[in-house]
Length: 230
Image (cartoon, rainbow, N blue to C red; front, side, top):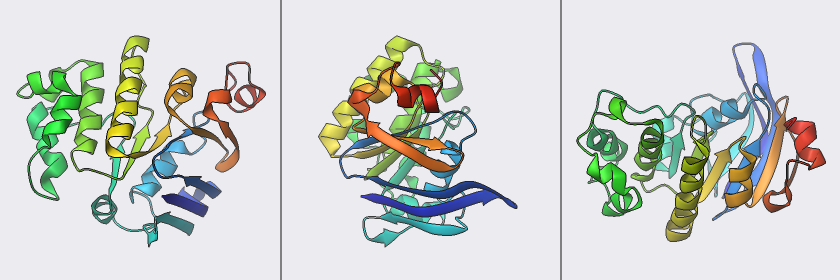
């Protein structure tokens, strides 16, 4: 589905990603883990066209998307939920979701409200008045209304209490199964990664430093101690 090959990305004259190569298989949840400052968000931004690679390749199936503008990448079937959610706080829930379908036209798919019944109840509420969990649900729902093939999630559990993280994990598993969705998950919450991901890779100083089956990871795993310090 997604193939990243020898990717180099930076800001100005500084290189952050220094030859990242990895594969996100179709229909899986593939997790990327690593300490802060290792380049995880930089990789997400490059995948979505918000940063242009200086070298390397990003392929979605057979289509090269590296360096394309964000609207072209979105049209190819990629959706992105950034760290910090990125919702429009002065707009209503419904308006936020309508912005998610504006580029392709049409209406908000009914199944999105079935996945997120609370948002259906709150559709006329201003997004800035929602709780943290409701705002994260809105950010994910806004990405899903475009009917993507690949969903990029950057630290979706950040700031959420454990019960909400568990609910989000259950919902993501359901959506992946229902829509045959492929998910690239940047996450430091080991419990969430173990629950919903198939594969976990580790980013260290701008390079992939190994990987493992997500179900085999635990707080006692040497790879977790080495790369996350948990």
